[in-house]
Length: 235
Ligand SMILES: [Fe+2]
Image (cartoon, rainbow, N blue to C red; front, side, top):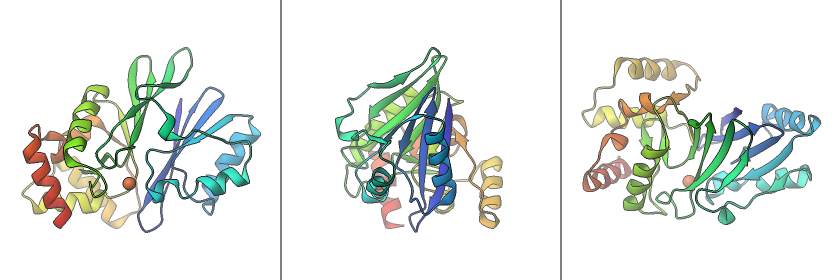
């Protein structure tokens, strides 16, 4: 099992992903084919005779915009409409690994996340716009109460070692919001922040790392969560 990450790309700093498992590749929220690294990787999957599926975490344009271009250009790619994916469905399974999809409303009603399981442990989670490095998704077209419930559900699905993959690169903004609201970042997160300020580097974080400072994940009270989300909206 391998996770591919491309981007960030565009003014919203979107990431695109793929989960490669056995002979299959699941592309999730593809970035534009203008990105040559992305294009080269797709062409390599095709030359390796991989069965390629394309799906999305949710219906916001910045996540689905590139679907059609990709499907037009590569007729080998099969479209898997995320609206038709059932909560907890297993997309594909090999002897040791599988990919499972979960419905996670809040940022928007139709939001899904994808968890790659290896040896019965959650190895990686493609989280779209539910959780971000240092924050969570906005609820402008969703519902903060639902997002809170979804986050509590995610807590049950991941383990400390689970690698987290987000829909956007909002790390600096999110850290600045936390610091402006009285949070002292743990030194290793402060180190990542300082490095990121001067360098275009995207560190893959884990659930354990994220729980150590991401206030939105630490809060267990629904009202406090909604208050903090509202504060973030006005920041
Ligand atoms: Fe979104």
